[in-house]
Length: 370
Image (cartoon, rainbow, N blue to C red; front, side, top):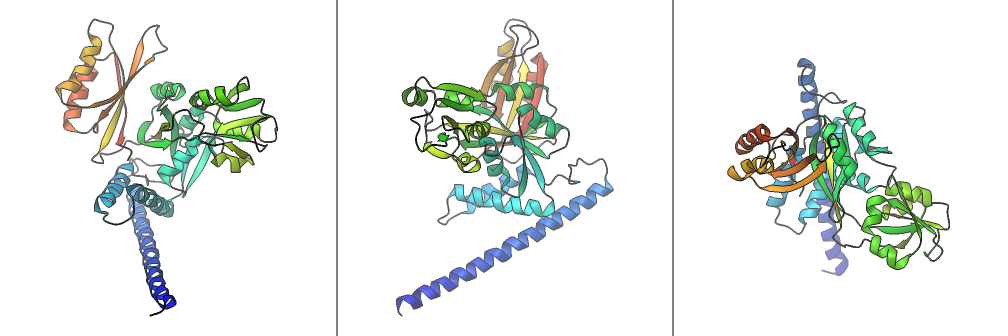
């Protein structure tokens, strides 16, 4: 058998496989439509059931997490866990879009890392709604103008995003998911190099993440913090003596050149984002619960606040304090624990914590990011 005959035989098999996956994805879309029809019918018969703009809740983060974890566990082939995650989320996005098109608010304008995080979580079959400020993202979800919101909450090198933390204190929304996005910063500009740059725009967090690079390569250059990296790219476009620090995806969006890549000071630089929802999330089997609380003004109060976690064998993943902004020298504690608030041992522990706390609220329980 000659080479061309062998290649044709293999390519014919590839074509058959392609036809199979196309048929199966279309079948999955049809099944998703059936699910949507059943949920819409049930919602019409039960007007008190929680619903979103489309009439019913179509995004079930706990279900999607379970599907992806099962596929990863079953995988015995060449495809990587990360590739399974990306492909599965895109297929589920297409299927969700067949039920109803979702709207997701993000910190804008177009081209921000927050938009990238939202697309990573929801896939491309959603309508991204950029907002100029983080409070506008919260408000868009609270007032049902969008289905969900995505906001940055902390960076691996620069810590918590203060504005997001402050907004979480007062919002009635729930955390429905988390996204970890590796952050690679780039210097973008109109010119081909940065020798003529007199001013650099970027978000304050990104400027901090690239502080050492800026000191070494652009000492003395004027620095201006703006509302987002995409806004920085927009301001730098058309100005030959200005540059922006942003993701490389913003270069094409705003007609800029990439003058330098990977300029972040720490190469494992990662930002954690939260998904904001009006609905609570059911257990997925591997979850995280986020809490906010304050101590009573009495000796040993912080110890009593945390003691139930130890007594019930609950792993505390994070604790961070923030000024309450209500009373001087009074602090709120943001705490993440392992497990879902509906787990029996966590229920018991949280009841004890609430009894010992001056202020207590569960921000959300949601699937751990893979």
